[in-house]
Length: 131
Image 1: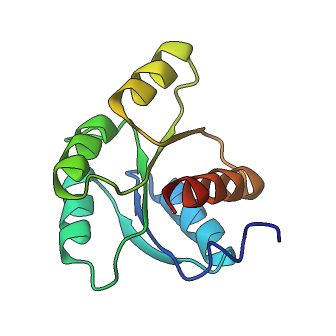
Image 2 (image 1 turned 45 degrees about the vertical axis):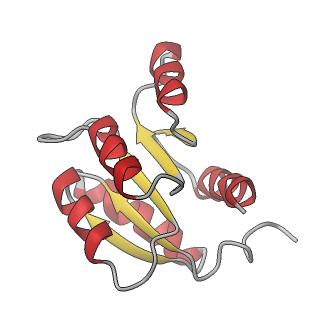
């Protein structure tokens, strides 16, 4: 088993302010047969989480966004759904950022640019970890 079947039919909330990146990640998730809910900022992402008709299985969120950062979104998600796996998507590759994300309790971290195999590996790991 390559891990992709465990990911099929999961619902992923993608919160990303860059439309191109949001579309790219959505397409990658669709190729993995996942359902995608997309939001352009933290506030609309939290509204989508609260109003989702399907249970959200994972969140993929950009770190740097106007209005509400990914870390602020993470804190709000933890208050609403403490066990929901959260994958931070960012251009930050420095060790300090990775350490602060891990200390905050973020389950996974992926640095842009993103590839389908890397995304699949991270999500498969998180799915096994949260099962």
